[in-house]
Image (cartoon, rainbow over all chains, first blue to last red; front, side, top):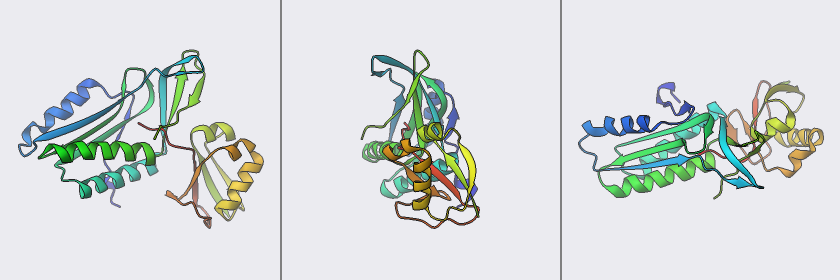
Length: 148
Length: 77
């Protein structure tokens, strides 16, 4: 696999609303796009055994994760008619209320964008080697488990 | 014969380190048994093993210099 094809996916820290706004505005020159679909994953203040989650600390198996992202991306392009597709995931400590996953699909008509976006989020959660450590207010933690 | 072990998530916690080398383990099933004898908490955990970035549920031959990653259930997103 060529190194060039591997896109930058990981962002150290939270994904800021201005980064998302910039990503949207960059597409204004692509006039064949008729629909965008965006998924934003936000860190939630779950309560586990009476303790409140205040942040999630994300780590990844970098090399394998980037290959997986690439594979998932290629498969979305094969399956749906997309103009473009962007994925960003945070690493490090993200506090509740901040964004840790940003999936952005664009197509001529809305069906491809919305279905591809949901397909990508599912595959990312199931197949990409990323782990979230849920940190409570007293700094104790548990390892997060994704729900199906 | 040496292999590099990478441990992630809760497995790095259980083992107490995230990267080290071990010698004279020749197959993934043998590695699982070796690790579970040393760290019994692993027995109750579902984890995948990736050899040189490839995950296989079958028993897999390990070659000298292989990178073997221990992957607990993913929780990205």
